[in-house]
Length: 251
Image 1 (cartoon, rainbow, N blue to C red):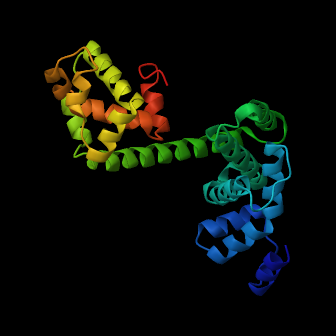
Image 2: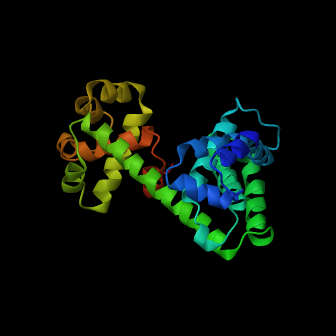
């Protein structure tokens, strides 16, 4: 805390609360941001360690996730709700780390830690307003990630000379036709030869596909753009798009 205290003294400030510091940072004090983050690394490390159930080093990926979460918490904190910043930051860090663990396939401890977070929200000092603040933060994060994923998918589609407008205009109109197109996409992504052709040539291997499906070449060509799009979703890291299609894609 020494650097932070020296900073406060040089500015001739009275000792502010962490909540006040968060507001100053939100107003553009980047030097203060760096000092606060640096001084609260032990808190971040301790919080991340409580989720991972092991000692966390600053070189660990989980610590980096916690650091980013603490940074985000500073900018998302709303002092008008009268809640503690440190409790708010703790919940944000834990949830971010849990999401990271889940995404990387090490979710065996997540359900336990998720329950701990819920218990903290209900019994360890988080007010109703603070819980709402956390939920609002998560909604904003979710919305941002969703937009980023859509932009990424749009960029990938452009490599195949496709756009969202194309997909809207040329998607199969009937449910059975969509199901058939999805099944064709599944055949594409499960065949190394077909998948490599699609990725390298940036077009659907219609002639090769014709020999492996029970639909006409004309049908494949008519639904070509939709099949390509679904194939890209299936093989890509598109969490939200896959969730939207879950059930039909069986993934």
